[in-house]
Image 1: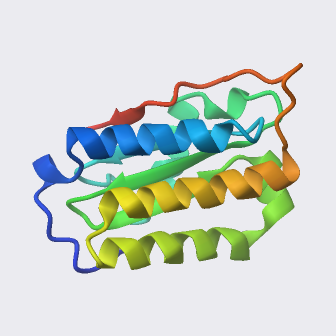
Image 2: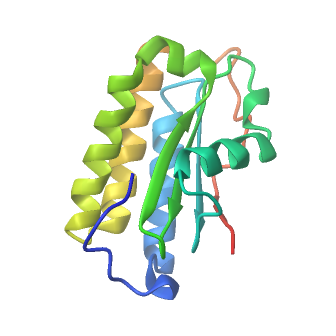
Length: 154
């Protein structure tokens, strides 16, 4: 799914403060769930459909290896104006297709206003809420299974 009004230069897509804001959003969301959230950003998508690229990255990052299969990847190809959200089978099966479309639409609304960090952070919050509903945090058994940093491709 593409988005318009996405005119910020790639090198300035997120400044250091905005990157930290996004990482803090991931950490905050993950404090309420056993689920895992990752962000992958690159300039160009290798495929026509960004969901195909998100799927490839998801498995390359070994995100399917979480204990409850409840990891979610937010993929952004900023020069191509594409994004996708890819959830593992544990969370996808519990939420359904409409949930993911709603998330994409919310982040696109923010991107169209050029609120990139805010849009990503809001999306992370919403993903975290969905994960919390089905995979609440258990301080005895849960631990951070995946890094919280943003992964940058080419």
